[in-house]
Image 1 (cartoon, one colour):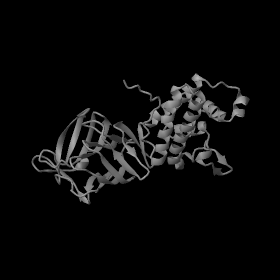
Image 2: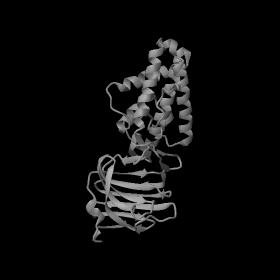
Image 3: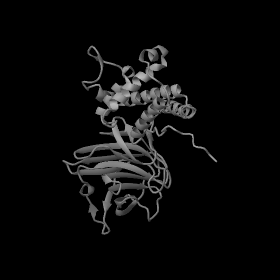
Length: 330
C-alpha cells in the first residue's frame, strides 16, 4: 500500500525561472520529510525561507509597479532592492498589487514569522524567548501552503496576469508558455485577468503538433459562456478551423467555418490578433494571412459583430500539448 507523504503544495507553475522552480521543489520535498518527523525548527526555517523566495520572485516580476507605492521602503530617495525587503513588507506590497488575498490580520502573521525566521540565530531566539514547537511549525507550513495555493491560480506573462481555470500550464524563463495535457476536452485553460473594452494587440509563435488544437477565447464570462477561434490540426472535413460558441461547461458547437479551413503545415505559426473597439476591428491572422468567416450561404461575416465589450480573452489547447513563444501583449 502506498503511503502519501506530501504535506506541501507543489503547484508552482507560476514561477517562471526554471532553476528557481527546481530549487523550490527540492525545498518543498525536503519539507515533506522534516515535517513528518516532527523536526519543528527545520520545518519552520525551511517553510519561511521558501516563502520568502516565492514572494521575492513575484515582487521582482512586478517591481516597476510596486516600487511606485508610498509603502515601498527606501534608502534616502533610492528604493531598496527586492532582496532587502522583509517578509511582511513583501506581503503588503503584493497584496496592494492584487496578487495576495486581503485577509484581516494576515499582515500580523507574516510579521510574526519574520521574527521566527530570525530564530535561525540562537541569540535572536533567546532575546525573544518564544517557543518553537508543533504549533509554530504547522502554522509556518500552513502559511506557505496557503500562499502557494493562492498564487497557483495564476500564470504571469511579463506583468500580465492570467488566471488558470484548467490544467497545469507554465511559463518559463525562456518566455515560452506551455499548455500541457490535463484531461479532455480541456487541457490547459488560461484567461487574462482584465477585461477588454478598448484595444488589444496580441501576437505569438505557436507550435501546433499534428492532431492538436489551439483555441483563442473571447467574450469570456465564465467556463460555460464564451466564444473562441480554433486552429485545428486534425485536418479533416469534419474538423475545420472555425468560430465556436460554448453555451455550457465542456459543451460547444461550431458557429462559422473559417477560410482557410486548415492551419499551415509548417511550424511555428505566427499568430496576430487585433481588437479595436473604437475602430470596430477584430482580426485574426496566421502567417500574415487574415482569416475570414462565412455562414452556410457563404456570406462573409464581420468578426467584430461577434465581439462583446467588457469581457475577457484567453486560450486553451485540446488533445495534445501546444506552446506559445515570443508573446507580445499590449
